[in-house]
Length: 122
Image (tube, rainbow, N blue to C red; front, side, top):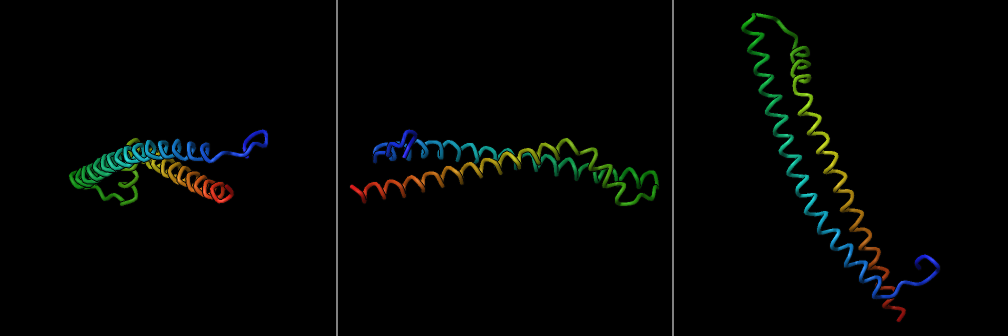
């Protein structure tokens, strides 16, 4: 039933399945782009983090300083915080996109069930 108590016709259900199939295809492409963006931002973060780790270790060695690993790690984490934030934001976007894909697929499955029920009643 739709608003006003009217039953959906077989054609309306099939049209909605087609519309959602197009949404699913678009979202699948968007999800692929977000996965790529997430991977690129993770690479950038790890490269920056590892470069800073080496730099900090070398600097401490040159200054003949005994530094706790936690202190060195904290300096590196602070210096690479922007890259880390970008990576986490991109992870969140990818996760949200994946949830959208799941939701659209579930809607299509529900409409297929509805279409089968309508067919069996006619």
